[in-house]
Structures are given as structure tokens and as C-alpha cells.
Length: 320
Image 1 (tube, rainbow, N blue to C red):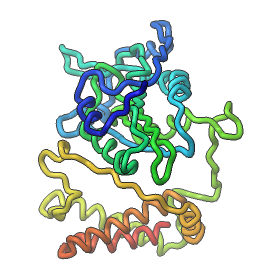
Image 2 (cartoon, rainbow, N blue to C red):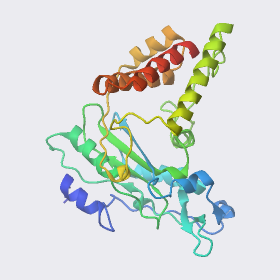
Image 3 (cartoon, rainbow, N blue to C red):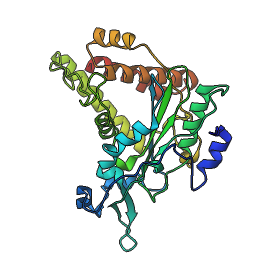
């Protein structure tokens, strides 16, 4: 008989050496003959080492909702043949005692140590709050360096937006957001053809920066100059506005909350088509505008923040 786990029990188990148990054990077949071991003892890049500095131990936490219940065995079997085969996701980060440098050391991966499937009470009072609390707890814990620094948590509980939720946690030394998203897509398949990799539409007419006139070029150069001067002045004598976004000493140890909001893709596409930009431009623009308006409302006595907000809106409208 399966035993359900409450949030309080989960928090206790996160501090234990064993953690939460998965449903089924699946072994990998990695050996020393694996091509991954050709990269043995390669040092971490300077940027990857930076994420191991005190106060900069950064993890990337993301979540993905599914329309159906998640089958953990299917997920594990696919990860063994995709993600686990990547050198960075099947290597330890070991510190050389003599030099102090951190190196990649390939290892055998036990998928059960990385795919966590907690047993959740299906009659829990607030599923959405449970998922938010679960992710918040993940942000306050770290992954043991005796194994590759990533894990996947499968929450088979019905929320407002999904039948099941997957929560990914990667140490930032494994890669940046773009490389991790590319790798994540490579681990998926098309719904119409389970053997085919997903494809992304390409717009040949789009460009990184659209220049429509000489005036737009001058405005772009001016905004870039102002941004550079503000950066220099802030480093010399100006101070950032005291808001919750400004990290003070010990900010890395504070608890975090993840708040999500579902929006209509049709609405986002309507804005995209009207402004002739990308979906990513619309999402970033709305996020920046909303955050800027909130900070101005809450901390509106800052002239610098108001100036930056106004200039950001001008930059967005002139460049795109």
C-alpha cells in the first residue's frame, strides 16, 4: 500500500541523505568505454566556476505542466537515452585538492537519484499552493555534489492549469538558459511522430534589430549611450533604489516564492502580430512593464527608477 507524503514530511526528507524515493529503479549501462569519458578531468569554464563562489551558488528552477498524468517510468527510460548521455549531466564536479580547480569527472548515473516522484495525497486541500510550496522548498536546498547537479521532480497532482507538473532543477554551472532549453527540447518528441525531434518555426524576415530609418538608428545609439553612462554612474556614486529586488548581504539564504500566471496564447500572438515582433519580445516587454509599474507605485519617490522606466519603454518601442 502506497503512503502519501505531506508537505511537512517532505521538508524533513529534503534534509535527509536519502530524500524522496522514486517509484521504480532503472539502471544505466554506462561504462568506462563510453565516449563521455574522453572528456575526463576537463576543468570548468571561468563562468561555471563563478557559480560555485560563496553567495553565487545559483540553481535554475523551472516548471512544466502536462495535460495528462506523468508516467515516471517513461520519463526515466527516455532520460537514460537522452539527457544522461550528455557529458555535463553525467559528470561530477570534483575539486582538485592540490590546485583547487574544479574538474568534470564522468560517473555512472543512477536515474533514481535524479528523478524524484513523491507520493502525494490526491485529496490535498490546495494543490496549487502545495506545488508553490514544493518549489519554494527546492529553492532553499541544494544538490549533493556526490552526484551530477540536476534533478527532476514529478508531481502527479491536478492543479488549476495541469494534470501533472514537472519541476526541473539544474545547477547553473551546467549551462545557460539557452543551452538548457535546447537540450530539453532534444529530450522531447513530436506528438504526431514519436520518433521525430520537435521543430521550431523560422521567420526568415525577422532580424535581431530592425532598423527602419536613420532616426531609429540615432535613437538606438542614444539609448545605448545613456544606459552605459547610467551603469558607470551607478558604479561610481549612484545607488540602486532600495526595493525587494536589490539583494543585500545574505540574500542567497532567504526563502523564495514562485508565482505563476497563465495567459492566453491568442492574446500574446495578437500583440506580436500588431507590433511585428516575436512572442519572446511580447512576454519580456509585458513583464518589464508590469514590474516597472509596480516598483514605481510602491517606491515612486525615486526619480532614477522613473527615468529608467521611461527610457526602457522608449528603447523597447524604438528598437522593435
